[in-house]
Length: 399
Ligand code: SF4
Image 1 (cartoon, rainbow, N blue to C red):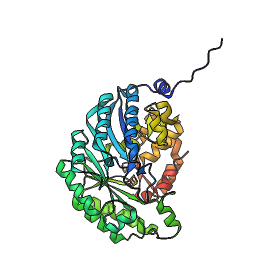
Image 2 (cartoon, rainbow, N blue to C red):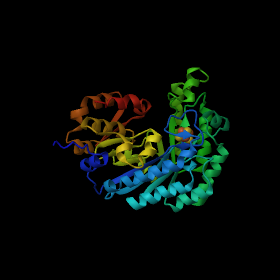
Image 3 (cartoon, rainbow, N blue to C red):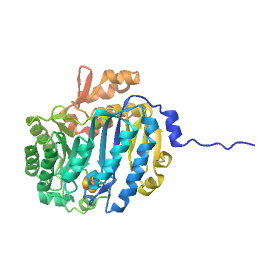
């Protein structure tokens, strides 16, 4: 009798193709719930689905457990609890997530542990519990300081509520806080943007992220924009806003370390740096992405399927493929060049056993000639002109 062939499960495939190592790893935990949906947002998050929170967290905790055998020897250097709005769910859920992580993995005592919070969903009690759990970095969504603007964006809070939350988090003892801001908003003037920066700098956060608005399909902003209900600032003003922020933040002692990120000395985001330098990370939760031993994995984006899987990676992981050498070279370049320090040619040689010039000689030569890239010693990085058209420059490294 012929024995039927039994296909290996994803867990078995992972175990066979990915050996546990003692290398550092980062964890991303996705909480896809929000109080209401912002008008510009196309992130994987849901409003008014609170009845699913309990079941979702049970499934998420089960997924954490499923990674025990793969990650048992890794040192977890950073955790990012993002969303959605992780602070919208009760603190007991964050407690069970952190408990499960500590029980299953080697969490470095000095690991950077961030939670994303939105004003209007955070309380003194939640902030205090997060601190006890070892969370040492808070990322606060603000986007703008004008209350009419916040309403237009669909945010659920005022600037005053944000400032109260910020000061409360300081009182609890957080000394590493990021504030997210957006520019290039509908009909926004340079004056309004200057005021946003001025007010935020008074609070003196350790880290500021500054993103230009992208009008994404399937958002209320997309249809409003199509119907010409408002206009975006023209490109010249948008760029002036970016460089104004750059100058203003530099004057206040912030280091510009990535195209959209600024920090006080020693406060750059360790977790995000893992993404930009092709480090190992495992994404846990709905739609989360992972990169481990040159294998890319994506979790399902279907919440019912995710919850029904109850931690079974075979059901959760919807896409798993080894990253080709070509893809690794492309990512090395276009992720690494997002950092202001750029990429090291020596690192490229060590990683790919090939001189960078052999693969990208012509591209690099042309970009340097156009003053979009600069070569300094071992490093290649974007010039200011290159930052302005970074999408164009980075696309040149696609093979
Ligand atoms: S709070 Fe963040 S994740 Fe939630 S809807 Fe607004 S932008 Fe999206």
